[in-house]
Length: 283
Image: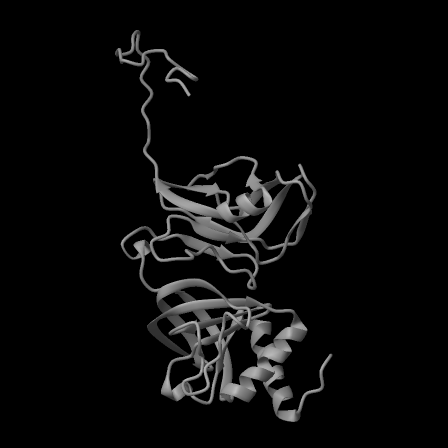
């Protein structure tokens, strides 16, 4: 271990590793957790905070400027939270907030845990069972059944309430040279309802900044496919690009599709456009 730890901090770190061995994330319960709901969620390489504003995770003074600490906003709205308060005892609640996120190396995470202990105190670390937006179109929409193939990779989820596309994360690290394409694992399979299809599209940020797109955009997934979803990325930029494990690499839109009945006819109805094709309406 790079940094020496006092006995109490070592016990906290051991407890965190114990929880992360069996669950994808843990809830850090501060000394003030009885005065407010849990807001600190620790993954293997990511810490997420659900806060009332971007300055402060303390229930008292002094506040902590999260953006100055390197956290960025992921989403804001109402969240559903489930965690194992004690073995076999599930606790659930909904609360509003801004979801902030920061990626850490293992050594940086040790320092972050130390800071949590020093500034916020420590009550316990318990397994996080679920953290997701509590409201959105899925409440009145369709149920998408997801099978996780890697417990450490988050399943597809909407970044903001009301978004059309769900973010998909990479389950592996891939280095792509300019012009190179790669089939990237996502560590999930799914069951779409009958009559629906999934359309995989590039993420606008990756396309604009790095020239990363999809070879077959949009990729089409039919409702009867049950294998792992894989993303065919292509590097259209001029520099080497590295996809890291856990990175958001694509977005998925779920849409209803209609069955078409094919009817062969002798003639088609006439329209103003007629047979005008490519470029027929000008530039």
